[in-house]
Image 1 (spheres, rainbow, N blue to C red):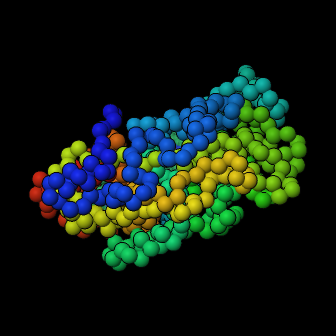
Image 2: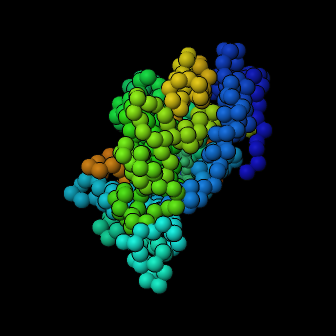
Image 3: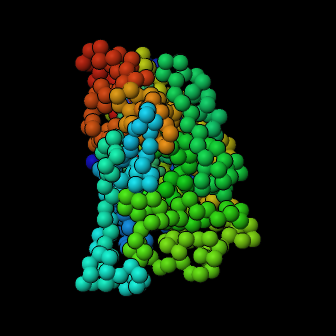
Length: 477
Ligand code: HEC
Ligand code: HEC
């Protein structure tokens, strides 16, 4: 997709003023902060260390192999292989698959049978020179060193089938990570009851050593993923490394061994139960690490955590560092007249109730993502940086648009909750909605249901010209 020309915010204001219309949804110029100078898609926020950025981008794009730990089941071999649209870090073509079961009105992700995420690939058949004698011959009797790893399949008890999850864009998300929980509480409190979103608080499994408010199992507002299930980019990195690529990691946090992402996924099986010797071909952990509680099959470990050690596995840190530095998508005011007409309609139709036009602003001194808490290797976003993602990052009951996937024990109503999709940069996308079913904005709007039904109806009742104006406004974000 080609890059689109944009106006500097000050030109936006002057053109809008020349048309005799007040206001422009961009932050006002002259307030001396961040977003006044727009960057290209994929550029970094101001103030980023160039060396760290280069290293982090390389790590995010690196294609890994079976000897690096890819597998036994996986979806792709690089973060950058899925997050591609427009620039590295973008949305993508890859639509993943989830499944689950509803029994007696309660959701079961079938975690013991490989759910709810179904990995689409496995290592298949491969020679393993280290295969222990006890495992030999299990796949093909004529070749005692041949492993056989099946792919994940939906088990027979599945009732919620083949739910798509589109790859989302990552631009600007470091700024979202820097927002304090209280900000999201404030957004929810300000919403009318009929469309009020739910602040999804979750436990942090991989705390950021640079943020003193995070600890192991501390609570934080989840803001990432289609269902806002994850609270930090650092944890998402370890989660995606394991669940998308099959690369398991161990880290240390103030002397505690972080093993939440250290165990491999096996096809249609709970973590760790792959056929002995039929894991990937990453080197096994040395005895010293195993003695300190690290599984022998963990692909990348920092080692024992004794002595109050804090150290995040370096790839996990670098992925988070890369995402932290990504600037918001640039705005596009080229269709000035429609954009100006569409903005008030976006509000009057009710879109702005969830896709809030609120200007977010990072704290004065945002906590950095820090590999070991010493402040020596960090990725940070600028302080007092204003940005407009056009989302409340809350989850809403979207009725029939809900994807029916949840956590163990969720009611069916909870499985209908989806995070308000941020609308910034939507013009760089070719698929929309959680399963990628829509390829244009009106189709996406017409699928809104539940708490989004009133806005959908308001949109549908507008003239074709005014629907177009809303669409052009959304495409300007
Ligand atoms: C196979 C394709 C694929 C690969 C590989 C992949 N992702 Fe993703 N990514 C996705 C999909 C699909 C989603 C949406 C997941 C969801 O919400 O269920 C996503 C969502 C995310 C999000 C949440 C963004 C948001 O909108 O809140 C982050 C962060 C992320 N990925 C980081 C990574 C990192 C880091 C890696 C590499 C370790 C990675 N991804 C590898 C497909 C991929
Ligand atoms: C009740 C809250 C709510 C309201 C009101 C609402 N939306 Fe949404 N919107 C959402 C949610 C949640 C999603 C993600 C839905 C999904 O894919 O499951 C979404 C998705 C979208 C998408 C697709 C974005 C993407 O990344 O795929 C577009 C475009 C969109 N909304 C535009 C609008 C417009 C225009 C209006 C007003 C007519 C509107 N929305 C009103 C909550 C809302």
